[in-house]
Image 1 (tube, rainbow, N blue to C red):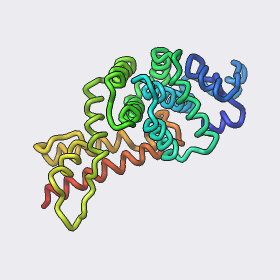
Image 2: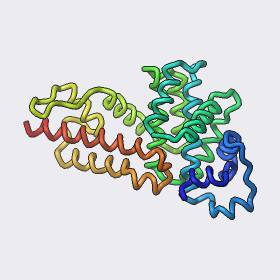
Image 3: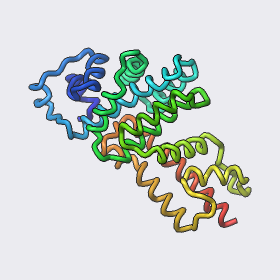
Image 4: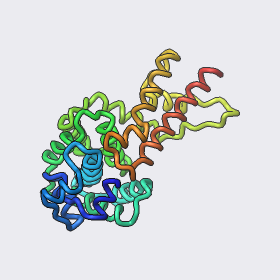
Length: 262
């Protein structure tokens, strides 16, 4: 049974303990004692626990970032709604995600404690943390621009999770490129803007060799492989996020190859 099935079936609100378990338990209206935790067979290192932690941290921190500039705009709310729609959540999952988002907007939200527990649950799973950062970047740019307060929070998150700020900058460049239209008609040569955006998605420069480009492509595809991310703690319900990233990387790689062969 998946982590969500265990929540829906018996309730594991406080299985995580700490602030993440407190938030999840509050929105679920459940309380779970130690005996029930053991009965469910969940522990701090289980895949299900990591998935519950990722789900809880993702949407609460997303709400915190949306509130960073002092107000949550309609665009940011709509962007969050689009994330929920994109993930094909069931009505109950969507409701919980929205309530976690609202928890993150509250003045007493303890970002430091949430991130400390999230890091503990994720361990050294850098690909999982990277997916988390990609989602938070999308939240920061939901209204079309990144506010200085949002930028500071993103950098604080990097420091708390041990994620290099330089890698955040690369993710930001990739996000910008992905938001642009770099698809092209295979019967027509791509224009320079499309080519530049495709290189940015792959995280390489136009001067890179074919081998370097292929290596970057394979590395990114490995990092975003849905099955691998799920095994590391990405909730199964969020697999569409990883799948979409893989499609974007594949599209960029095909465009670069096409440009180089023309």
